[in-house]
Length: 111
Image 1 (cartoon, rainbow, N blue to C red):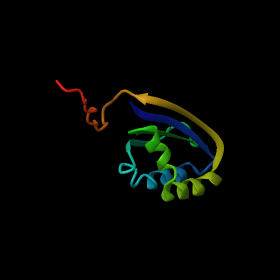
Image 2: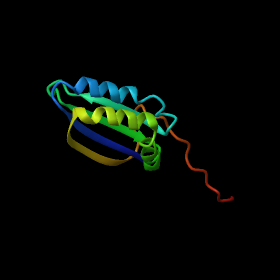
Image 3: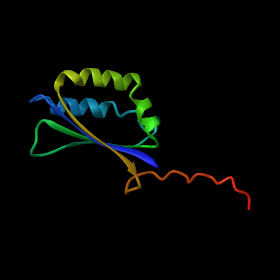
Image 4: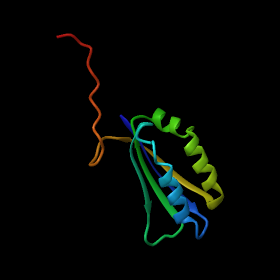
């Protein structure tokens, strides 16, 4: 099953938009790394929290993406602007609108 996670992070006051921009700039190349959905959300009534929703072909694809140079650079730049308050919920994604379908595994059973 496809791997997903919904995470939140709190920024220091005044840094939410800058961190959101860093996250969005780091999205280049994620599709090639195995990401099918990468969404950065900002609540209208909360100026310090960022929500990130991700769907990956597998948890291994997600974990490998964190070793990419561009990802590590973005994380390093964002960390001083964050408070350290994070949440993360990992999911097995059953499907949804907007997700690219993957071919079903081929059966090797002869008929």
